[in-house]
Image (cartoon, rainbow, N blue to C red; front, side, top):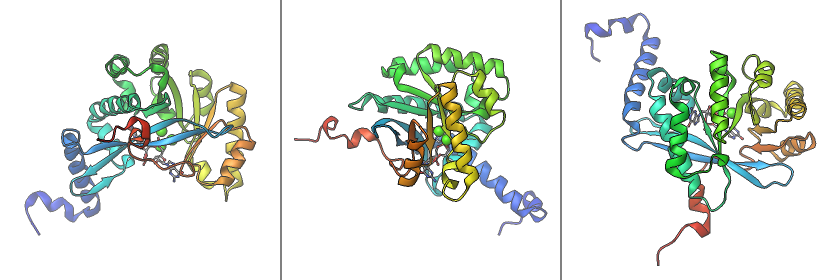
Amino acid sequence: AKANVGERLAYYEPEMDETARARRQIANDLRHALDRNELTLVYQPQHGLATGEMTGYEALLRWEHPTRGFIAPDDFIPIAEETGEIFRIGEWVLREACTEAMAWANDLKIAVNLSAVQLSQSDLVQVVHGILIETGLSPRRLELEITETAIIGDKLRALHLLRQIKALGISIAMDDFGTGYSSLDTLHSFPFDKIKIDKSFLLRSQTSSQARAIIKAVLALGQSLNVPVLAEGVETLDQVALLKEQGCDEAQGYYFGRPGASPSLSIGHVVITGS
Ligand code: C2E
Ligand code: CA
Ligand code: CA
Ligand code: CA
């Protein structure tokens, strides 16, 4: 092992230093990830519960690191947010997702996650608008998913921003509902087109009556506010039945499909296969 002076701190807090080192390494590698084509999107279907038909796909980011293998978004997006790399990555995600949706033979929606940090980007609306023009995607097909925590900072600014986005014809979903703060207040004062119940409630629904009560309450809330509700993390037919019975509008989860490669590749009639 190397034993230079710079590493002496490791003697006092070896774990923290290891974690810090790993983060620094990831932050550094992340700066090249785009140029090296290490980032990809996978797509997870969303289904209407009344008829079972598909309504859209959510784009989810994947990073195949050259030595560490696949790194989950929860493990690198916070770092990208810290370093500011999220701006470039977020723009790439939007462009990639819109381009992908343009290749589909249907006009299903594409849902794209926006980081809280992206909401602070002063030209966000112009960037999104530019990507729609560039790719030719109708704004009606784009849905941006944001979490409550993204708007707890400067609420007036966030409200103004969301109104501008909506004015373009883009819809906005509140992601991870039930996990943040001030849910009710935020729901009431922001123009959301959809509420996504956080998957943690669905994952606990079989064993926890509290989780079921929360799901029920959110569905009632959506109904009274006239905002459609999508349940995420739906893994079983029992959950589907429960959600349908309680009037949930849409669902997403392993029961319907895991996030997978470009859906356009699996739609037979758009892929032109040689000869
Ligand atoms: P999210 O937006 O809440 O995405 C849903 C997560 O739940 C995804 O994890 C998805 O793979 C997972 N999931 C879907 N169905 C099921 C299920 O039935 N059971 C279980 N156990 N899990 C399910 P993933 O892909 O690891 O993404 C994690 C988080 O990373 C996302 O949570 C989102 O907050 C963030 N993220 C992903 N892609 C992007 C992106 O392009 N930009 C930004 N800013 N954040 C992203
Ligand atoms: Ca999401
Ligand atoms: Ca979510
Ligand atoms: Ca999440």
